[in-house]
Length: 161
Image (cartoon, rainbow, N blue to C red; front, side, top):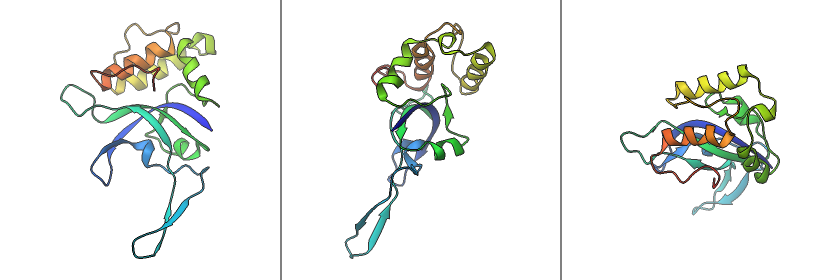
């Protein structure tokens, strides 16, 4: 299982619920499930990526078009193919503990150069995130909290994702 911190669009699912786009993308590493409908016809269900997200409640003043996710799956190949799904930290983690532990680290401690920090800041700025004060020595938690603050006015933090 791999874990990744991403931002992605919010989509309206067929049931009318606002969801993270990653929840609609098939994880090619998970075999499809099959079942029968009420008429006895075989239905094949593709398994999508699992995630936990900070997504807006849809209120004015919140960012309603994209969200922050901790996403996991067996293969990240289909996420890599989707240009709207941005791997914020540029890497995958083999456990959820690793994905959370990085929050206490800084870009500098992970070997990031100024150009990678500036690239990430630019991606976030395009989405309306206030990156003033975020530096190569800010923790990844500070980077993700700044992102979360743009999305939802009353989020509960990123360490609990």
